[in-house]
Amino acid sequence: MSEGTPMTTWRELRPVLRPFLAAQPRALLWGALLAALTVLMGMALLGLSGWFITATALAGLNLATAFMFDVFAPSAGIRLLAVGRTLSRYAERLVTHDATFGVLAALRVRLFRGWARAEAARALLMQPAKLLFRLTSDIDALETLYLRLIVPAVAALGAALLAGVILGVMHAGMGIGLALWLVASGWGMAVLVARRARRPAILRAHAIEALRARAVDLVAGQTDLVMAGRIDAQREALAQADLRLAQADCALNRLETAAGLGYGSAGTLTLVAVLLGVGVLADVGTIGAPAAALALLVALTAVEPFAALRRGALDAGRTWLAVKRLAPRMAASEEGEVPSFNDATAFALRLVDVTAAHPGSAAPALQQLSLHMAAGERVALIGPSGAGKSTLLAVITGEMAPRTGSVARQVACLLTQRTELFQDSLRDNLRLADPSADDARLWAVLQAAGFADEVRAMARGLDTALGEGGLGLSAGQSRRLALARLFLRDTPLWVMDEPTEALDAATANDVLARLRARAGGRSLLIATHLRREAEVADRLVCMREGRIVADLQRGSDAFQAALLALRPD
Image (cartoon, rainbow, N blue to C red; front, side):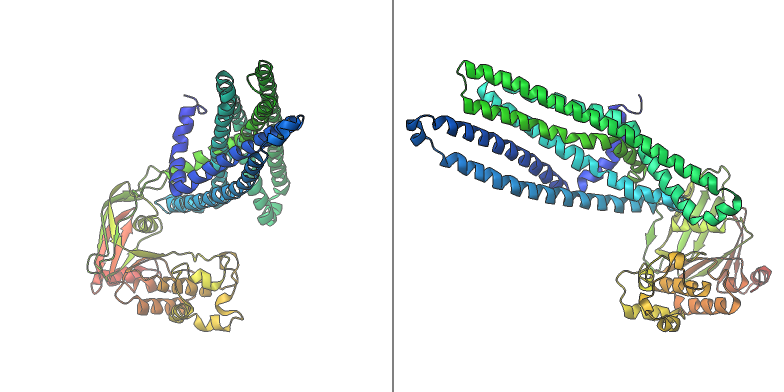
């Protein structure tokens, strides 16, 4: 079965459509019904107005009928429909857009949770720009599913049924034929446009993504590009991406023009056919002139909702691409998450026969590894580079899923070797650990990390703005801020990857002293090759080639020998 077949498309759409419709089902349903009601009231308003004008003109030709003709009921109906259409249009826009924004927000949360699962976060770090594009542009593309496809399709179906009913009262065959023709031509052209637009829409999405990435690379890396002699090549690559975008836009514009011509032609054919039909009915006396005017105006307005499908059909290719890229992460289950618990009397960590490998690698990074930590115990993982220490931490914290074995731990907080800070205020960088923390608690953890006096000396204190990656702080200040954030996160297990690497000895020793003082009865797991960090531990777990080769208790000669073999300050 080819990629573009309906069955394949539905299988790709289902993982995204389910949470899309489940997020706010009532609001989405009400929005579609209000859209259909708005269209129906607009058709009724125009049809009744045409009937009323024609009937009034005919009644005025004769003095007797002029006095007998009831102008109040139709005019009241026209006013009611006019006011009702305005209110329903406002309510439809309010409900549909509010529901859509709520659904897209829920999908972003779901996507974030998918990226937080095993190994997905590593992919996010490797391709942040591309995956950010998924979170913004691809999620936004999903609004086409509802606002430009489902809602117009429901409204158009309602218009076809109303037109069929009104003309069916005059002549059953003409009413059924009109309804079937409107659905077949309107929906059929939308499907045809969607199929023809799929390829250029996908090419356009790829071109925009490439254009953004290459523009960022050109601006951010222009110094490196000039030094490497690649600045002209980068400009050429940017121009090529822009050219592909222009070609895709031209293809979509041509298709939009053709679709407009198609819907215009279908509307003209519909109007001509209805005109001939009501002419015949009026000639034989089945209907009068007011009813003929009503039928013509209803047929005229019934085509317009189908034309609204054109924009959604043109965007359908971009929507299918977004669905295809988002579906795997949307459909990801909770399997693979590390079981955690808050019971402080139980073990802190337990790994049994764990085997793990990096994505794309056949060689295991961890081989049948088992490790047990009691609650409150402090353990240091030591070994040469490539021994598997960081891989083990990734498995423990859930960043990497083990191929075999089981992992269970207390609720944990990870302090990575690199300090992750964002372009935001110092206060908000701290509150990543606890959004509900007040300023008093923030100052307390800053004091515990030895950073409070320096923050008070800053002109804006907690409101001090940091640049990208914490720009504006020294390495020592960044590490103390990360330490304060760790203190703010109240978890029974702290997992640390070389917490004082790249710090001078005085700062590193002060950070470690504060870490010991704040840890209390918490469990600590530290991956390190530095003696000062390993001295915090009660046990040294020695790793080599993805295996544990020694487990040494403090007080033993082997523990002291292994400690002295580590790199000094």
